Image (cartoon, rainbow, N blue to C red):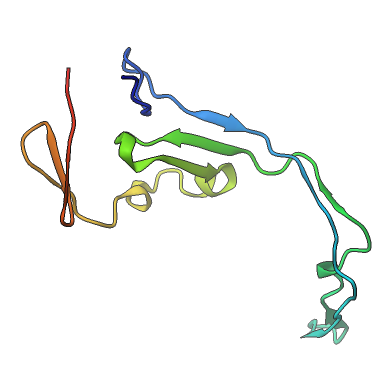
Length: 120
């Protein structure tokens, strides 16, 4: 069985890079322009940019990293490059929020559920 993980059999970190581009159809039938307040110079600030006149075409959106999780049953993580760049050197922002309890080398308990896995 092939297991998808972020570490290759050679011990290398594995990840994907996406350069998204997309189009969003503008299906709105009417605009709802409202005031968002005023700027410091007294000029009106309205939400016109929320109501484009045509379809929206996004070219070269922010790069996305695709990282298979180290534990295959946890799926895949997608991280926006801009967010990752802001977190450089701040490893505490990448910690698990929940505590995971290991029992030996072949069992992991998360909450009430226990997972068995093979090591080679």
